[in-house]
Length: 409
Image (cartoon, rainbow, N blue to C red):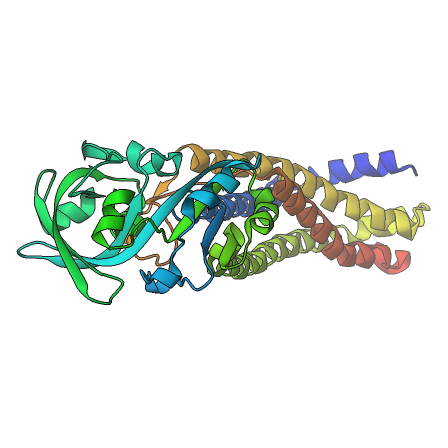
């Protein structure tokens, strides 16, 4: 008997009990749809968080003084870059570099009559494209200019929590290089909202020249942040810009903790994927085993008529393959629709949830990302494991003795 005929018989056999076949097929479709949806959500959330961290905080490459420690936000002369202009010129001459900009960071305390909070003070070049997310997120007032003096930008939510707004004056204190606090009165020039609460509420911005004067850093900077046309060139650019006394860090170095957490999380999700696939595979195996018990007499007749054991085995494997393939097609459609919804609309998790994520630039909306390679991989794993667990019921049917099978009621 040809494989084509066996395939037709298998298809017709599934139609005998349409309800059971339909429910089994549905389990395959929903199982795969869930896997694709989870995969799209995980890829979207992790990749978005990583790219947002690069765009808002780390850049693709950072140049720092060899002794600089980001956690301390040091303003000591030896911890700052004193050859900023030369390093900027070298970076901008490289074809891989999109733009480079200096920044000066300091730890500070922002105070009003009733409130105070610890935060990060960032001195920036307002003309740099690196700060476009802040510029685009401006919701009140005006953006900084290179010659802004006595003015800062702060987030809308932080200002609201402290009961202040555009035009109000606040006290800002930072520790100078001598370890003594310097305090100044600043006017709020503008309010912004980038959609990343954990980032917005922990940073205030002022012009680089203002920050250098306020912190007594002279013309030095904490780092030079470099954005590339292609992030895969980061290692090459970092190696080219490395020099005595200057450390070049790539986005992988700067986001190492996040990347390690991402790898751990992905392993956990892979375990979940395996559990879902196994559950679906067991349902398929149970369906085929029930079919074998119901059709024992029929198997005996087929064997008595000359059907070989391997043909009976192939017959049941074809039934499993039909259920798996149809279910996989439907699952891909349903799962892709779910990922499309995530990618275009997303899921709002609220400000409180976004603020609770520490050390990661996390937005208030979870988005998805469709990864064709993972969809194909999950589909193949689903098909492969279903066929694997279907070997037992197929083998069991093939091993039935014709005489005993014919006497089965």
